[in-house]
Length: 104
Image (tube, rainbow, N blue to C red; front, side, top):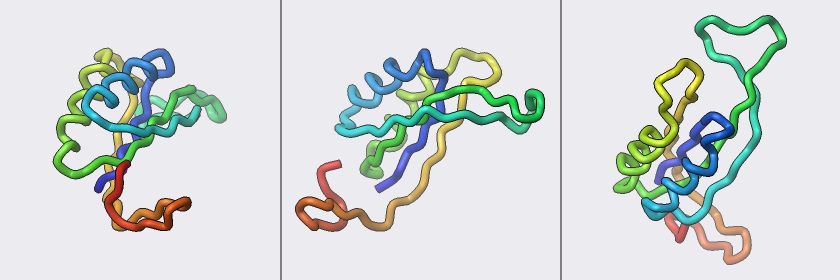
């Protein structure tokens, strides 16, 4: 399993979520975040608002989901965002106490 954290422009959040769900991902978590990139940072203390969409996917779906996110979230301008992929070693469903790969 992999955890995908996609930081995208706020106005594209709904389109990115729709693209992720179209690929077959069931659940997502969304956070409103602020930050600045490494290149040409804004004034000290000034941050850009973005949304972070988090989902956990089975390995075979990873490339398809990354492509879907990139196709929707890329406007071709600086500040479009980033996507981070992290391996998930284990998971626990708090209600059922099941561990490992599950319906995610």
